[in-house]
Image (cartoon, rainbow, N blue to C red; front, side, top):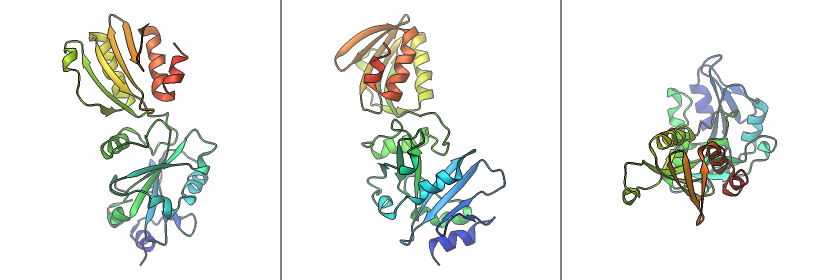
Length: 253
């Protein structure tokens, strides 16, 4: 049996056949997520998981344009690729993300665990969520921080950072950059605003800024330029830097 035949036979309830090689499936009526899978003659598959209300025709078109050649561009050593998707042209999203089977499980149920090693994942993403030069560790961290199943989400920017509170000496402030969600960065910023401290933040452009906060005054260094701004204007500047880039952020100063 082909992979498609095995999966269809194993799923209960039976999946819906959208085309001769694309299925959709929910384990229960009204389940929060819908699973879509496209099968290929090479006996591999591609999975899209979508949560909440969504346009089935859009997801089908997104999967329909996926090719086996594009899937085989990714490997264990290079576990993801970002490509253009015509189906996303009229959506807020910028890119198609394709993930190797080793990055995340793509089984639809316990009964279909056999499909994991042959099933790639794809998702619609914003340009600021995944970076083309991410390493394997960063790719895994991005996947943990970005809920790609929510097609109605706000951007979840890719952020690499290191930070410390004001009680730590500057000479000790050299730990490696880690990957964090926007919400976690905001929590750390709140602590730094409260106690003073330092933060180095790298956005999706790999542009890095050094931020020092003390007594509601923020000193920022970027590209050898340093300026001071109040916390009243900092939040908008910082959000623009993360979502739209360094040049755009300079327009809101």
